[in-house]
Image 1 (tube, rainbow, N blue to C red):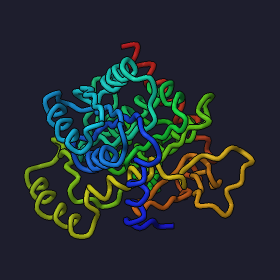
Image 2: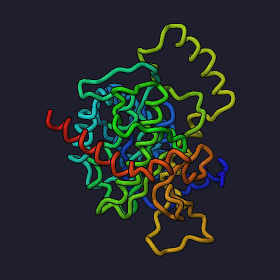
Image 3: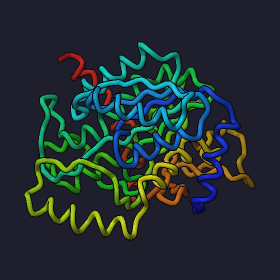
Image 4: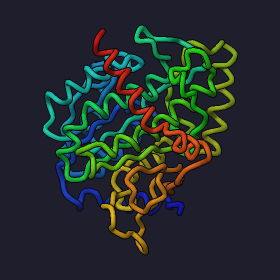
Length: 335
């Protein structure tokens, strides 16, 4: 069921009444949708503690100063990660958060950029897939002990929920099958499958994971990669972006909808055997009401699955993706 923007705002503006002291981590929130979500949570909550991961300390300091004007009771921490196309940089940033925080209630991730080219990092991973998937899941795995200390932990990864596609089981890194479409499908599909499998791990029985598709957002502020020619950059800036601004969401509304997904009760997790029939609780990706892993759409409704996900499950790909990802993390840690 679609949720009106007025209902989204009603939920978000009530957050201050629900209590204070929420601790949140934002990855990729210096522009666009992530910034919209960061501003929303800052504005609507009482005495939040927010860790902001970004590339430049100077830019983060400027951002935190502007956010402080929205909420004088908020506490901000800048966490520098110079290059999130490197999983090791994500792990270092997570380690800094672990050093400073006692718990994490919300983990909201939206880093990325636009590119069609194939650029492999020194870690052996395509840089765009790394920032969209591997580095985000590195944050999740590293911060899991702090999330488990929260009474109601939630994770939101803003990407392309519901648009899962084909995976290459013997080539998950796309070393032999790279294309822009395959890369997008890989990051999207592996995100959903990893979140499903991760939520089943010991200690994660209260964790809610939302893979979110934000829809068309005109003012994303997203960087354009080096793989674009000059004329394509012109097309993006002067044709595509204005069209998206005309027909799509603003980053402000998209950000509010991210916060809605991160806080609203319809995306809660119900224990096995507890019925959610007759409530507003949505069906998870497993088709069960209150399943705990949700494919949240741009109108804040929840989608259960598509044919690609059904086939992936039949092929046992959730466990395979999880094991592959953890193996990549181990390999990177070995140097």
